[in-house]
Image 1 (cartoon, rainbow, N blue to C red):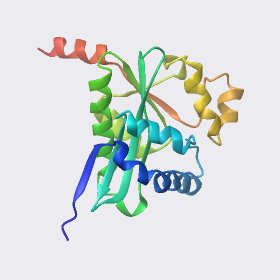
Image 2 (image 1 turned 30 degrees about the horizontal axis):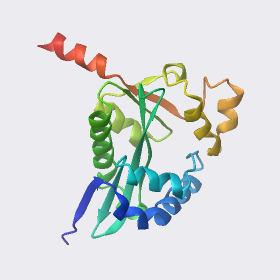
Image 3 (image 1 turned 45 degrees about the vertical axis):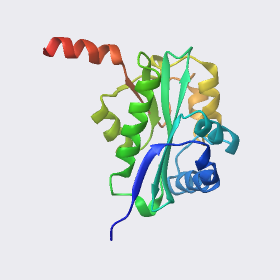
Image 4 (image 1 turned 180 degrees about the vertical axis):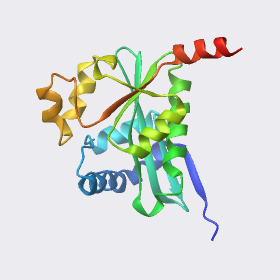
Length: 187
């Protein structure tokens, strides 16, 4: 069976997928029993309108999603909300979505440090392949609006109790300056 897989920058034409996208995120959070920060339909729609999200479709059916957001005066960019519909998992779609999100982030914010918080081993593996490294939370943005986004997570109390030093998630960071210096060292 030949399926048509599209992984592309989402736009206004994809807004009809927002309800199923949010349902998929909520269902995954319940199954995993771990935190996924909740986002409103309006927030996700805005990301689509701004060209700051990646959507995956298989034969026109919603299959996956990820969005980007800048923080700390555009010094940091997070790739967030990575989700793949259960029936499309195990086929490498998360990796493709994450790679496209990474490329979009680098295109829009070439000097920004990219980061993510994750509790999933698969995402950690993908991030590592892209050049992210585990870091302490102190190495991430200090932008209060980013940290407020964690309030919708079931593990927010841990983050709060530890003064944002620890949580269930692993913080991962891609610093473009470190990759530039590695290129020079390897030449």
